[in-house]
Length: 509
Image (cartoon, rainbow, N blue to C red; front, side, top):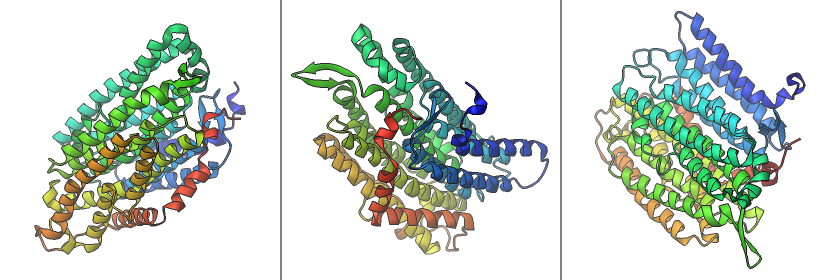
């Protein structure tokens, strides 16, 4: 393989982020003094340039690099859009967040977002377990450091420690599971594994394939904050700087779903366990979706019920994030082999909800950043009287919470409704029932914040001071949440036009 002959232009989005991260790292080393906010603006410019390259890849045939271990296809490009736009918003809201007295090495704060983003982008395009794991670790290690970057804050130290321990254990479980799959197929390339895994299953290695699947699922569940690996979320969300929490709640979660969909749909869906009355019984569609449904249901129930008891707004949003992972797992848990079109619709529903979740959740965390910093506390009472101090922010926050709760005329409602219909279509009535019941439960804790904003006197009557960068993020996320809810077909048509299941599952050029 001659590296000089490879089409490195396919890596333009990743190379852009990598180059900017390296430049900022060296600049941070040589700069003795000076405002590191410029690093944030340079990072934003790099992300915008990377976005341009990703948009150029949309609608193109699947192409591969490095002996098929890395691929640029419709699936990867859509997820990279989520990662890049989400990180862009997080960086813009971070510009006025960082204070030297709290984050001593503020230069690192900016370019660690870029290395984490690069890991997520590698995860979306990986077609080999090795490159996939490199992306996973790049994202994870950067996230560990960001969680503990407030070195003089005990909660931040605790968050980083717990995150490292749980992340390391989960990563080891995932690797151990993949080792079984490698052992029975002799390859780390997911397309080669897909070709050989049926023979291995029929050859008496079915136990190891079952074991590998479950260990991979448990190992990856921590990245999406799903049962059984959700316990880290409340402590890490509370201890980390709020922009880092926002990043973990959207970009890190979306990257976890990118891995799960890519791996499970490509590797495990071709396996036929047996044939009964001339009808094949599939390993994934007929066996494993039940376990995914149980995990999904438990994640929705646990996330929403534990959120009810929280008085710290970041811990409450952590359990909300756990519940959202449960909703996002429903399309995977209700997949059937009825037709490729239905499978494609389920994946599109996940991508749509992740895009909607990006806007509404980052909007929430931007408001939390402003309010908590102003009040000097993360308690729910910090929102008291917000409507009287800043009507626009209060109204925007109300709409974001309505969207997370799944109320009509919001992006969250359309996302949940599509997922709900997919569950009903496959007759998963009990899972659809859990969706409805837990959504109703979520109204209580989301509207605790609304009650504070409109019905409780604030600690001061002074107008809330909001930096322009955060006003900009709130405005864009509000518009995104409102427009997607009002005219969802625009986003749905965009995803349908640019996502092709056949493009995802076939070898590139």
